[in-house]
Length: 116
Length: 112
Image 1 (tube, rainbow over the protein chains, first blue to last red):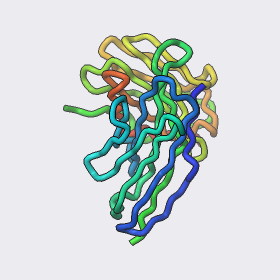
Image 2: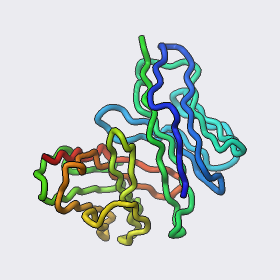
Image 3: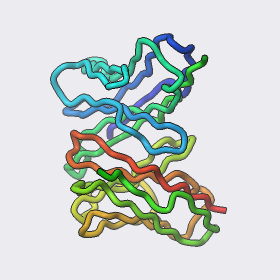
């Protein structure tokens, strides 16, 4: 069964500093990879996704993530964070489940706290 | 277009009672998935429905059940509530697997 590991439960970072949120998964056979963001008292929102092709994917608000097949990783980065980036970030992997359908597995989440 | 709508937003129930949560997906989305979110466990997959059929199921006891109607709206039911069922229950819909999910704002269930 697929597993998704987000090693850092909390990441404090000063405003305008760079940040990397790490994500590793267990199986790289034909996967789709996603990052979601959750603001307080809200549901999750899709931030970016990797399906195939270029290993570097970007979001509209400056985040990027790189698919690394050999390391089975999909780390999320931003060169300069803002206060508004304070939220919880979830990595997710979609692959074929035992029933023959795509199944999505989420990491436990990383809380990003941007310090003014 | 309207997003994923979950009702109610908040719910307080007593141990032993049952509860039904509702989810209306984005128009045209036939896949609806349910997750339980708690601070220590993250998002735990409950089940997925596609065109009224349960396609995937997580490792939850039989007290947790769901269904999907012909208009793609979905409900989940929890019977004989326990304190540990207190959580944020999230519904998500998708058109294709590769598109990722669109989530609702969730129903926060508190069992007292």
